[in-house]
Every structure is written in structure tokens, then in C-alpha cells.
View 1 (cartoon, rainbow, N blue to C red):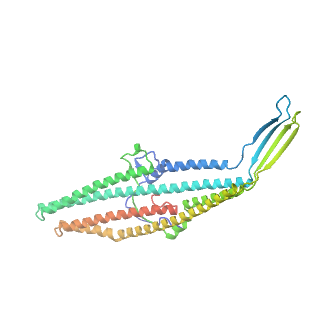
View 2: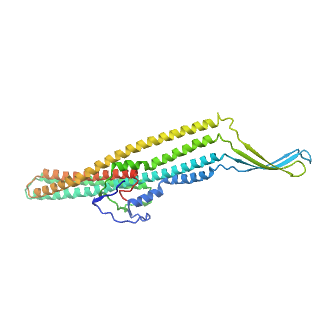
Length: 414
């Protein structure tokens, strides 16, 4: 079966332990964000009330009608009368009809409960996704600050060499232009961080009055490699809440067909009465009646055909959802595998070499052995490599978050 986290390779950022108390929003972790989302999401609240109503529908499906109390009197022109009678009548549907209706309603209730579970899984995925985007934006902000620091150092080095006559003033001007560009990039990154914050607030339904600038975000992108087997993903698909929900819909439609067929069976009507023929209530009696499905061609038969068609439609709905989920799961797994391989290549080779390259060129430029263009290209390569690495790490997180829905297991931010 599915193997969870096998090895924590490297923690780029430490995740501090935080309280799950959502009343304190000085910091916001993924778990706190999820608690707020579960509490504030309109779809979750609507489904919860639908489930409550559906459970009451189960009680109403027993098919018990109210008894009927009647009084009859004949011959009331004078003081004399011919006959009068008190009676109590009770209609009772055929037992199988009530049994099938109860089972149909219970299947409908279970379907709604599974729909709620699938909705919570989707909201969990959405919250983790936007939190990942925010964590990536924050890391991009750190990288933008590092970019500014690199070019500030470069400008100082270029200006120092120009003052000593070891290089032209053009090098110092070009270094200054690169610094201004880095500062502009930092401003753009700041705007992306603000947008990512508001995306998270909107997703979890955080009240606007609580959306303050001093909220910190404690969970960050950490390089945690997990081994997820494709066969495990495929095996777990049969337990996907979406498919199990439609299975319950199929069950409900099957009971609906049996319920329609049960209408061919007779209902019963019982009546007990006391009767007076002008002297006293000296007579007691009872009546038993049954319904006869005489007009089955226009009543019962269309109901059975309709229920049969609905059952077939629900079965095809299940097949369509099964194929779609299978395709999405396979595509997500291949994306995860690709992202994991890319990260490993970055960590094993590219990242260390790009850092070594920029350090060597910085030293060579300060000694006058290399020109400015060589140093600029080395720094751009290093920054580009770092940026690509964090993008790949973000994509890795997003694919693992998608796989969580199919595996029904928390892997990231658990």
C-alpha cells in the first residue's frame, strides 16, 4: 500500500510549531487556514444543512398516514334518524414499499455525506494550493532581496575599480543599471506577495477586518522528498469519495426502481366502527379494503420505466466519473514524477555549480582577472537557477497536494 514520507532530505526553512487556535491571527499556519475554511465555507455549511434535512426525510419515509375519524348520520329531517356511525380508518401501504423507500432515502443520505467529504478534500487541496503559492511568493521575495544585495555589491566593486582606474566608468554605470532593475523586480515581487495573501484570505473566507498586514505565515516550502508509487495511486481510486458518492446514488436509484415496482402491490385500508340504527350503538363492525392497480398502464408502468432509465443514467454517470478520475490521477502522478526528478537534478548538480560559478567570478572580478560582463552573466545564471529551483519546488508541492485527494492521505503541510 501507499508509503508516506520516506526521507526528509533537506529542510530549507524551519517550520515553527504553532497553535491551532484560530482566534489568534498574528500567525497563520496551513492547519489554522483549514479550520477557518471549514467553518466559513458556504458550500460546506449548505451541505451540512442538506444532510440534516435528508436525515429527517428518512423518518418521513416510513409511509405511515394519519388515521381518519368520521361520523355519519342518515335521516335528519326530524327528531328521528335512520342510522348513525362513528368510525376510525387507517391506510397502510404494502410493507415492501416502505422498506424500499427507507433504503432509498438512507442511500441518498450517505451520498450527501460522501459529497461533503469530497468537498472538504477539495477545499483542503485549494487551501494548500494557495498557501503554497503564497510560500513561493515569499521565497521569491527573499530571492529578490538577494538579487538586490548581489548587485549592490557589484556596483560598489565596479565603482571602486573605476575610482582606481582599473576599469572604465561604463562598468560602474552598467552595474548601477542592473541594481535599479533588481529593485524594480523587488517591487514586482512585493505586489505578487500581496496578491497571494489576498488569494489565501479569499479562499478561506477570512473576514476583511481580520486581514491585517501583521499576519505572519509560519509554514514554508521545505524540500521533503516522498516516494509515491503509481500502482498505489490507482488502487486507491476505488475509495475516492466522489466515486463512492455516485455508488450510493446508484444504490438509491436501484431502490427507486424497486419502489416503483412495489406500486403494483395492493395497499390496505382498515376501518373499525360503532353503528346505531336508531336505538343505541349496539353494533360494531370493521372493513378491510385493498387497492387494485387497475390503471397500471398509465400509472405504475411509466413509473417503473422512469426509475429504470434513471438507474441506467446514474450508472453511466459513475462510469464517466471513474474514467475522468483515473485520467486525472495518472496525469497528476506523471507531473509529480517529473517535478521530483527536476528537483533532484537541481540539488545534485545545477544549484551547487551555479553558486560556485558566481563565487569564482566575483573573486576573479575583484582581482581584475575577469571583466564585468562575465560576472554579470554568472550572477544572472545563479539567480535564474535559484528562481527555477523554487518554481520546480512549488510545482512539486502542487502535484503532491493533488495526489493527496486520490490517496486520501495528508503528505504536505500535515
